[in-house]
Length: 263
Image 1 (cartoon, rainbow, N blue to C red):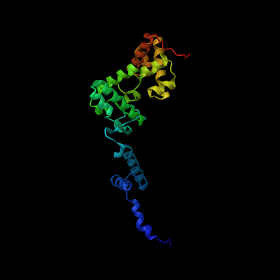
Image 2 (image 1 turned 30 degrees about the horizontal axis):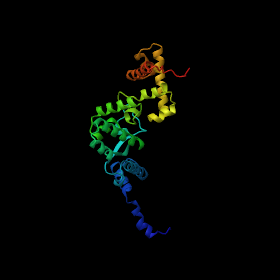
Image 3 (image 1 turned 90 degrees about the vertical axis):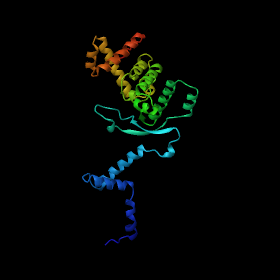
Image 4 (image 1 turned 45 degrees about the vertical axis):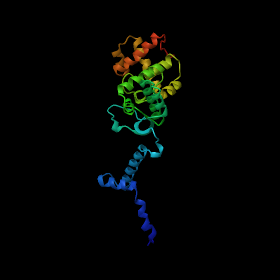
C-alpha cells in the first residue's frame, strides 16, 4: 500500500482555494448540467480572462484619463449582430489634458476643441486595438452624436484623411467619406493599394474591395445602367450604389476619369 504523505494531505487542499476555484464551484452549483470539474474550471478561466481584459489597475490610469469599453477593431458588425454579441476592449483615454485646458483659457472655438479631442480619443482607442463610435465620443465629450458626426465628416472631407472610428472602419452610419477618400487617392492621386491602406487605416483587402466595387459601378454607368439596375447587378443597396455614383461624378467633374489600367 502506498504510504500517505501527511504534509501533502494536510496542505494540498489550500491549493484549491482562490477566485478561480470559487467561480468553478459556483458555476457547478448554478448550472449542474454544464459538465464535470474540467469544464467548470475552463468556464471559470474564461470568466477571469474577460474580467482581466476589462479591468485596469488604478496605477495605470492617471488624472484626466478614463477607462472606456470600446468595440474590438477586429470584430466588425454583421446582420442582426447586437452589441451584446460584440467583443469589447478596455482602453485608457486622455479625456482631459493640459493642452485642452490651455485651449479653453485661450478661448479657442468650441468646435475646434471638440475636433481635437475627437481626433485624439479615436486614435488612442485605435492604437489600443479598439474603435470608438460617434455615440462613444458623444458621451465622453457631452456633445450630441449628430454634432460629432458632422464635425468629423467635415474634417475627413477637408483633409482627405480618415479618422479611425466605427463609422469609417466598420462601415457604419450614413454620410461616410472613406469610400470617396480611397477612390480619390487611387484615381486622382495615383497612390498604391499599400499606401492607401496605411493612410486610411484599412487592410489592403478592404481597399481592394472598395476599389473593385467602384470599378463595377463605373462600368455599369458607362453602359447606361440606372442606379437601381446598378445596385441590383453588383449586389448592393441603392444608397451604396448612389455613393459610388457620386464619387465617380466628382472625379469626372474635376477632370479625373477614374479609369484604371484594367482591361
